[in-house]
Image (cartoon, rainbow, N blue to C red):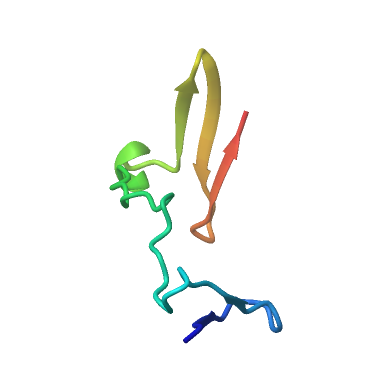
Length: 73
């Protein structure tokens, strides 16, 4: 028995089995990583702008009136 896996593009399904009809687990599956999360309102401390420094370079993070974020150098 061959299993076909659908992809996001039509016509791009592919057959993947180990010869016994059982799909092997990919060896490159990485465990999910918990990313740090920051509330931007805390970063700007009640304002609408904050300076961020990365490797000696200063960037400006700004919250627009529409509630969007803009990061500029």
